[in-house]
Length: 220
Image (tube, rainbow, N blue to C red; front, side, top):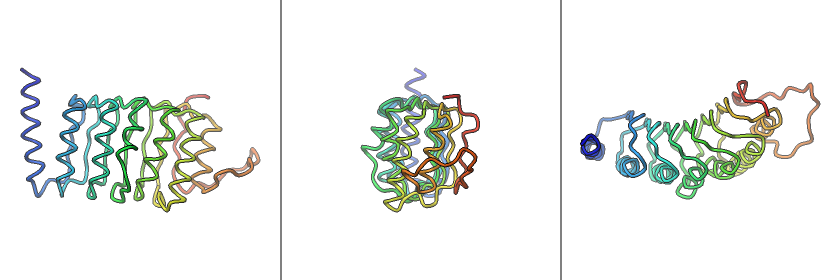
């Protein structure tokens, strides 16, 4: 009965989302919607012209949820903030997201923390970055992005920069990932536009154009 009531309540919310002309922020974090209901929500948000800020973290979206989120970003030219953390996107979530996504210049902040993403997701995460031209802040804390994953992110960041994207990126959060020193340097070099430079002297500190937060990374 509780499940039926939640579905009915969400159905009414979806109808409101499509019709509303005033809603700007929507926080549905921790509601255990699952991939099907999240998909319906994303479809409604695609039709909405006013919502700018959405939190759908902690909704057990799974890898299918990645596809729904990618479709939302592909169709929305108004959404500026999306928190999809703690959704169990897992090994296939970033791939599903990148498969649905095309160029988006509206989104400025994306949070994908604690989604179980690791080395196999790095190329797809890079493809997602290539599509988000206006992104200013990316949070991938608490995943399994290790040294090898960081190299994949480096390629994605470099590709996005080459395509004219990520020029506004100001914050990249990588805490609670086993990035290690070498992995952090991979990302830092990409952010500076240096894809394959010679290794710097150990004492050289590179000035970063963004705040690269990995001080709490796990040891390699």
